[in-house]
Image (cartoon, rainbow, N blue to C red):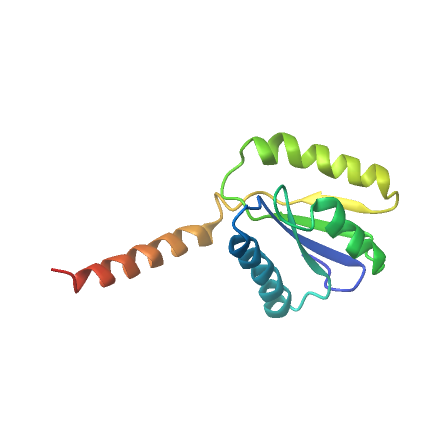
Length: 133
């Protein structure tokens, strides 16, 4: 279980987009996650094209006294960014900020709740299409 005290932080890590409303959607997800989960220290972070990047998000949390950080990838599957890029970024940030520990959760793929989301989207699409000629 993730500690909800101020000493533990969570980073919602997304790819990032040149379409700023997509980045803003991730920021809203992070804010909603913090509120609904009761987490005190949550920051969004982006691999590219969005701000802050992972280092920036971790620095924000570390500046608030957070020393234990969990990165939750907002990625569907384990691709090259999560397999290669994210571990390299984590290692670089940990070198920069000794005393800060960063752990990475798996991507969303394989989570039992994902099927419920897909089934719900299919139901919505089918209902919307039911009224069409």
